Amino acid sequence: MEMRALYYIALPTGRSGNMNEIDYEADVKANENCLNQNFTLIADKLYELETLLNALIEASSGTAAE
Image (cartoon, rainbow, N blue to C red; front, side, top):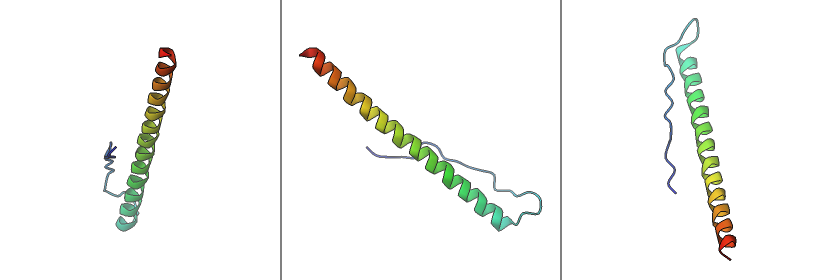
């Protein structure tokens, strides 16, 4: 199964207060990376659960037919 990004995260690129622009951009990129990793983990877990559910359904339908 091909894994594609489910959600693209776009955080604001402006900065506020006395924060250095380079540091702010680095923080935003780090947050984007964390969010994308979280969505990937959620998608992987859903795929794992779907596979398990399908296996259980096949097993239960196989025993009911016997």
